[in-house]
Image 1: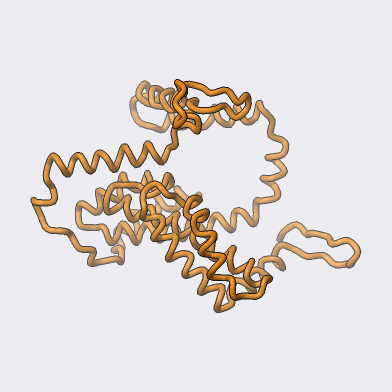
Image 2 (image 1 turned 90 degrees about the horizontal axis):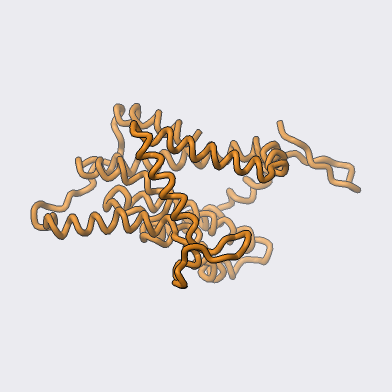
Length: 279
């Protein structure tokens, strides 16, 4: 099934499946399951806050993790802390979709696309179904990614080591060409968007030469322009200005989320996009 790792001096061999079984044996203890639940709960709350993101949430919660797992033995504390932080990361990755669907404000960069369809469903009174479909897609994507990582980690790492400047340039050129070709019917607009994205991406300090590019001696531009900042500004500010101009808060009642179980038709409609997005 998997490549074997030989341990010299012991005369035994351990496979990937054995490592997985040992990992499940450790992770499925009651206190580690509790830590995972607490981590996912905290991570979901962190992901709802726009602009923080999973990595920032994990960094901010390291002291909290140390205090929670401090009462365990050192060997168990390290494992439980990693499980809790992993729960925070995955919870934050999903939590950003909540504000994307309900408020049209992405909580982090991976939930930007969720605003396009999720917020439209919420406006039609289908916010519960949108949240459920997002959770199902996130779960399926996590499972498929883990299986793919287990099966393809070594072959992909072998190929990645052989990558050089020419291969990286060809890969980036292929990605930009694919984005331009699949962006819509107008190729001109797609090329303009691609070029504008490349120009914005050049702002900041060059990683290779260390030269500041297009910063105009402004310290805030030395780190470049973050994608999440642009996304939050584009969606959140637009929604705020729209609410102010149209006074949406005075026109109707606050909608309630009643049904969290998608219908059969919604399952059928979402099965294809979930499979394509996670493949």
